[in-house]
Structures are given as structure tokens and as C-alpha cells.
Image 1 (cartoon, chains in turn purple, cyan):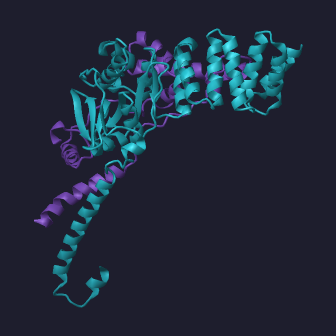
Image 2 (cartoon, chains in turn green, red):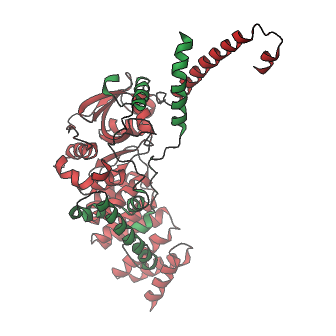
Image 3 (tube, rainbow over the protein chains, first blue to last red):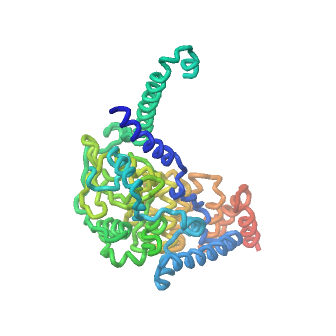
Length: 133
Length: 327
């Protein structure tokens, strides 16, 4: 009995361990910390470096606008969406929009995955199926 | 194991091998289970009295919006914004934060959309005690979870509204379920996969209880950039009230006062910044320029001299300003 059980469970768990140890490709990157001085120099004569940064930022914002349109956002909404982003967020979006996790995706409906996730749900590691609680 | 097989006992060998295989299987299983539970233990927490929070809390009156399709992002935002007295519907938020081709919403846009409704979005330190402290303070928290495994992610936003330390339960408005209860263990396992991303939306002037001055200032500076200085002023005042020793906070408040059209108040704030940190060249510079515009030439001169003398990123600008001032 034990032998049978371990024969069935071992490959599953090995597979799970291998998958679990894979690098998390879609994990969110920590937001780069923005230096407050540059966001706060609307004042005064600190214009030279600020202007240069502003040019980069304008380009990045344009880039993010194009990316949002490519992601299916109505062009009429794009400008206001980009305007609300901070410099750090614009950089994050411009550099890694494709890698950022998007809340509410679906899991591929493979049977193997289904069984695996059922097991991990029962182990309390995941929360895919409402009925496992 | 190899020296066992080298022993001259051929009659025993097959049996031993079977026994070895079974032992190995069982050991592997046990090791696997140990490892598995190793990555999802219940979060270890200090005692409630050490954390300064109640045993349990439930934030009353957070409206629930059931998500449709993949729109847990807009639904979660609507819940926290409505709770903060912003009258906005999920349908209004969808075109503002949802990415149709991704079937979801990304974190930077969750943060930025909050700003469009005159609320400051603060990203919390990614740890369990911070989350509990915010809930204890009555701030509902948007959290990002991966309900599935890293290899097949199922990213999800929910709103945490309560906890029970005794029962080890989180209460969340999540998906299609209001007041859903999840064990700390399961919640933390799924939340940890987003590096424990958590965000609160507060009116300018309110601060999260758990964040330090840098995080607070980053959030408010972003808010100020997307809105305007006048709207951000109450938030800066709250920061200097909580961290009066923080020169950067005074400096930021000075800039906001100046942009909002009150140079006297700005100069006062810049003065505080230089008192707290006498080598903060950029504060001397802004103080000097503000005083110059106010016609207080003597004090302006001294301030600009300070700025030009101190080594800093802004030294060249300060020297330039000083030259111009003398001419």
C-alpha cells in the first residue's frame, strides 16, 4: 500500500518540487525608488539636469502610451492613464510591462495542472478551487 | 548503499533492493512534504501587544463589488475608493485601469488610478505585521495574490478588511465572495508570491500607520505630480507633523507651499529643513531663491552662499544663482 502510494505520489511531488524551484518569471519587480529631489524641483534654477530628465520622461511616457494602445486600451483613455503615473511607474511600465503580473489571469486548463493544483490547494499552498477550503 | 550491494549475499540482494527502493520512496515523500510545508508555514508574528494592535478587527462598511470576468482590479479599487467617500463605479474604473489584452490590471496602474480620484496611493512594506497594523488602524488594504503556482500564475487582487489572530484568519472581499475567510497560512502563501504587494488609498492628510518617511514621501510626491501642489499640501503637513526631524519632508513641504503660491510659508518650511540638516544644500538653495523673490536680500544672500559652498549635486546651480544674485 505504502509502496503504491509512494510510486504514485513521488513523481508528482518531484515534478512539483522542480516546478516550485523554477525562477518566478512573472514576479513583480520591486519599484525603483525615485529620488525625491528630482520630482520636487519644480522650483528654482535646477533646470539643466531636470530638463534632461524631462526629455527622457517624455519619451518614456510616449512609449507607454503606445504600449497601452497595443494592450487594447481605448486611445481616448490612454493619455489620462499615463498622466496619472509617477516617473518611477512610467519607467517600470516602459521597461517591463510584458513581465508585470496582471491581476486576474486564468490557469491553463491541463489535466495534469488541474490535479497538481488540487493537491497544492489541499495542502494549503494555493487557492485555485473554492471547494477545497 | 553501494557497500551493502558489494557484500557476498546474493540471496538477499533482490529483497534488499526492494526495501531500499521503498525506503527511498518514503524518504523522498517525507522530504518533499517537509520542503513543501517549509515554503508555506504560517507567518510568525510578534504578540499583538508588541505590535500594538487588537486581537481581532473588522472594518465595517467596506462596500463589496463582485468581480466580473477578470476585473478584480477595478472591483478592488472601487471598494477602497468608495470606502474613502469617492463616488465611483466599477464600470467607470474599467477603462481606466484594465488592460484588455492582458485580461488584468498591473500594479503601477492600480497605484496611479487612485490618484485620479484625489486619493494618495501608498504601497506598504511587504510584510504581514504592516498589513495587520493598517487593518487595525481602519485602512482597508488592496493586496495582490497569486492564487496558483509560480509556473501557472493566477494573479488576483482582493481587499483585506479584517483579521483574527486567535483563529489565524484573514477576512477579505475577494472575487465573487464578500467577507471571505482565509487562514493566515494559505493567505500568506498566495500573497508572498507577489512579494506581498499591498496598497492603501487615503485622502491627502491621512498617512498609513506602518510606513516610514521615505515611502510616505514617495507616494505623496507622485500624487503631487499627478494632481497639484495645493491638493498635496495637507499630506505634506501630515508628514512634517509625524516626522518633524526629517529635513526632506520640510523641503518637500516648502516646494509645495511655493507652488501653491505661498512663498512666506515656503521659506519657513525651507528654514526648518536647513535647521534639521544644516548641510542640505538644496534646501539652502531653495530658501535663498524664495527669499530673493520675497525681497529679503540679506538672508537670501547668506542662504545662497551656504548652498554654493556645500558640496552637492546642486552646487553648480547654487554658484550660478549666487553669481546672478550679486549682479
